[in-house]
Length: 390
Length: 182
Picture 1 (cartoon, each protein chain N blue to C red):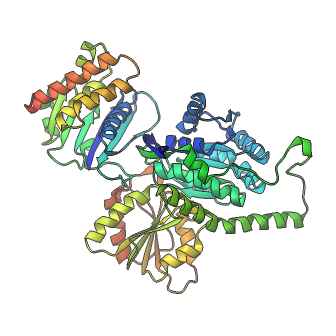
Picture 2 (picture 1 turned 30 degrees about the vertical axis):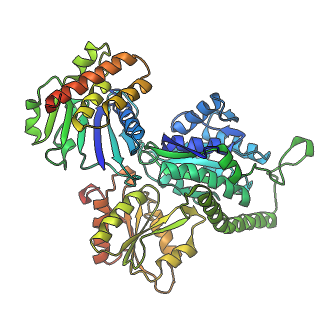
């Protein structure tokens, strides 16, 4: 019997590279210099060693890299790229173009603080600022989850014909060296069929993309994009369930961890979920009815699932490692909007915690839970800083 | 869970040391998590590495505030702020030409001072002290297994394998002597 997976010691970034390799992309346009991460280096190493057969391109900017991703994808081949912070911002215009072109590119983004001032710290503002670009967004908690999510993202993206971002935070996930099960090619091949779109560009058949359209055509195109997003949750849920059946590892799209009978639920994303699990276990031992709701899929935003999970829970606290000036924590605001007008809606507290990469310990989370249990919720997200134990 | 913190300056090898240590525990069948934070990949800036070792998957994604051991590559980094919150009796391994008595005012820690640069130089490694310090750490913690650590040092040293191995052994033996078990 072929060994179906191999335990390796990998960083979160290298785990993403292995995930991408297993998906067998044909073209990898990637900007190779800062803020690029070791994802790109490892991919080229895998290419050199013959494990990855792809054409890598290194254009002069992330903007050009994304332009190359779109055109390559439209020719009907699987495409992968990776970036972080400023690089993602330089792509911004082309991110809209990619979803408009219905190009199912998968891209990894490492969350890093955005300049200015300059920094390298974990903070999800960079990718959350792309929430309106029409990309599916997954936020990952561990190296293993990042590898698995790259494969799930291809499965999902290519079915709904939308691009997808697999996102994890700097340092705590991206640079964290941990034990990762790397599945075999045969295992992945049985899960992810070759990309074979019905319509693609080929000079010999005279098709093109990007022509000028009238209002009605544009309207129809946007509506169709929205309908694809609407289908995404169900498609992504199936992709996760089937991955779990195959590997034993499933993550759900909105995970409820120890939520039974909870008086307070903590809603967050990414690396803080792992720390929150530890905090929840400690508080449950002390008799506090606390649980975690992990938002793994942020786009499409899982409104219905959050309503189902949070309905009737007295208090909810949202932890945001990001900041939208003039609005507050992005997840806080989106959770509030999702629950607006719902019968038996919880009181929602929002905390800007870990912004700029500040440390978020189980003790700090427990402290915020106690505060949530006693205080009235405020309209705005509350800053939590070093004086609070961050 | 065993939690270790390493402090050094960019270029001193704290990140590589964390990788070697994580690999050694991984080969012993443990779950490990090792990550570093740095303010820019430049020589001279402060670098912290964090390593967790456990028998089950590690879920914590935050800094280590209460380490079981601290390995300090550069004694100039060792001050009250760095040690804030660290419990007494924590193992503190310091690379310094000064004896451990020079650090007792920091608190009632289990301090072991080692002149890593002298040992590295003697073994032909110049100022590269991570093999010495990893050997000493294994000697102080009784983990990872020393022979296993040696094989990892052998596999991961980019150059000067025998020099790294002998440096690692010298560090280990000094630590064992200090503990009174060699």
